[in-house]
Amino acid sequence: MLLITRRSKLLRIIAVICIILPLLYLLFVRHERKRLSNYQAAEYNQQWVKPFLSDGPGNYEPQDLKPRIGPGENGQKHILRSDQKNAAQDSESEFGMNIACSDEISLDRSIVDTRDPECKRWNYPTKLPSTSVIIVFHNEGWSVLLRTVHSVLNRSPEHSLTEVLLVDDFSDKPHLGKKLEDYIESLDSRVRLIRNKQREGLIRTRSRGAQEAKGEIIVFLDAHCEVNLNWLPPLLAPIMRDRRTMTVPIIDGIDHNNFEYRPVYTYGHYFRGIFEWGMLYKENELGYKELSKQEYPTEPYKSPTHAGGLFAIDRNYFLEIGAYDPGLLVWGGENFELSFKIWQCGGSIEWVPCSRVGHVYRGFMPYNFGKLAKKKKGPLITINYKRVIETWFDDKYKQYFYTREPLAQFLDMGDISEQLALKEKLQCKSFDWFMKEVAYDVFDKFPELPPNLHWGELRSAANDRCFDTSGNGPPALMSLHYCHGLGNNQLIRLNEKGQLGVGERCIEADNQGIKLAFCRLGTVDGPWDYDEINKTLYHRVYQKCIALHPQTGHLSLMPCDNNNTYQQWIFKQIRPNYR
Ligand code: LR7
Ligand code: MN
Image (cartoon, rainbow, N blue to C red; front, side, top):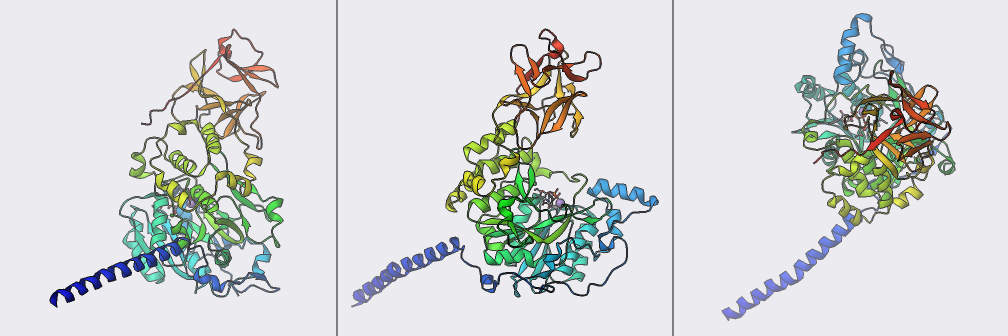
């Protein structure tokens, strides 16, 4: 008897295990599948109503804005007195911008409305999703950081702005310590501050911000921005329509010296983000193909890439696609990583003409890359680019990057297997698809690069010195310096089509001499022939050779003379010691 009950108990347990566990497992799998294929509508999608134009002001247009008077008001420039020059210069060198000037301007200042007047007549969904505005910062000036926060609080719909999340990337300036905490405490309960325990760089810090954010939508801003009137609803509407859309405001400029707020683009002209093959960010004016899709010129339009700093995205979507590659360090390339990932894996990027945000373009970068950079061998930004192109480019396109940036082949980019696995899991399309369907206008400006015939230092047989840009921008005369191998000032490339390049620039000739010039857009051709035997660099149009002046050291074109060592140039590949 006892045995039977015991046995039946055992059977029951086994039965329970056999039925419940697989059931639980099935439920879990279904849930997981649903979560992963969670590209279906988000909650807020039900609130979606297509934006429409009305005759009068749209539903989020601010009413009765009171004129304000004071320094920098209405986005005007503010000029300091001459006895403040030192303070201005000190802050320029500490922050890359004139904080002394900014400090005299109200945190609530008014700015110019840079929008097309048509923007004032758009109506957006009445109920907007909850939004976290995330601002990451490292050692920013007090008044620029807080003016960013104030502008967001002042110019965002109350019901939609859940929080302004400040993420401190291990700043060490006293004003960003307790003083900041106290200020935030007294400001608005929606402003929240979290801090990194070590320097992470802006890329990882943004990913952390996304993790910690409470809103359905996250909007990233640099810590020196001012949002313009009615900036938020136009960014949210396209995401409400399709949660795999990332939206980007049109960026206005704030002068780093006098804080004048002004548009970057000529009125009525719209641009979109592209790139060149060395992975520098570029823009291209909107062409007929995109314009023809618009019913109104103020409607959002598709863009292959974005500058990086300012954008809105569904938080869950951002996390589902892996946020930023955590292997990208500190600064650079993350804008492309996110752009390629979004487009190739089923999403899209839209730039929004009616959303404008001002950004202070700094005079220079005032911070270093910290300990993270010291662990890496070689230039960090190029390492980031290499990770991105090795993950997202097809082989054919990878070659263009290595042609334009030959030293990148020697860099250690770390392990990208997780990124490749993610690409597999999300069933992302090829880069070729992206280039043909989305970034089709890149080739108009930056055609496919033919291979280099030669690259490396270009040394004179006469005095053993090397071609050098001296760090100048074009137009500038090229000169010769001690050959030092390192850096890009002496890295010269000659491609199969006769173009001589240094970085993104070209070497050309006119009657003043041999010059660093802007490469002509839309062509990879050049006038140069290298004679491997006589070591001369021949200009096909002028039919002359590059010559070094024995006395002045000046570089110019001279009638060719094969026996003249002052016309002999030797290419030598540079092998950096990165490992
Ligand atoms: O280690 C760091 N940790 C940080 O938190 C370094 C920086 N930061 C913060 C910094 O305080 C700032 O708030 O990160 C933000 C961006 O740094 P910036 O302002 O020095 O960058 P940037 O404006 O020079 O550079 C652009 O490219 C970067 C590439 O990684 C980022 O994507 C920036 O956000 C981006 N800025 C813009 O896109 C604004 C428009 C400019 C253009 C075109
Ligand atoms: Mn910035």
